[in-house]
Length: 297
Image (cartoon, rainbow, N blue to C red):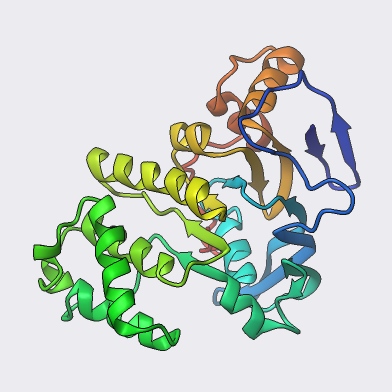
């Protein structure tokens, strides 16, 4: 079911049914969501004038276990802030977020055991090798070093990084290789909810395809729930079971890619593409400049 939001209410709009390969859509009554966000709000004080900016404004979504759920928005829309709220890196000012019933504020440590996050700019010890970085991450999570190394080698091999490269300092590796190591590091902990914040931004086409294929594999083989923010509309259409569009901190539309494209063609007379969907509901292109007082995306 498509949802089109405005500032005062949420109005469901029915669209032609799509036959999914997996269960998609919000969890039915009685089924616990993998990720539940209700009326989440976050403000920042920014700039020399100490201006208050609402980065996330009354956002609600319910994500089913096993879904790949996409979040699209222009630069400055608030999508990365939303990911940081879920990952406990930021605190809510209003609303609540739960991961499999665990509140991100009251049950922070339980939530951290269930999630992991990959950001567009992954942080590493750049002088150390992939193996050393992954071994350090394994120790942080109390994993057995030997089994963690074996698992890391398997994950990196599936991403196209051979074992002979594991001893090379990360600073000598391409950004695409570094991002693959970041994904391997996240998967070492077998997260139930994987938060991917623009994981393929800036990657070459081969590396991007490797990562996209691996995301599908993780969903299918690990029963993981994946939340993906991306600027790549083709990537969103390929990977995402459902998509939420965020504009100025608010969620303005939600549905499967097929539902959203059908709706903009039927109701707005636009070409049935995700680009048309994006422009219809945000009035922006994905790379619109950010407000000078607002630097989050």
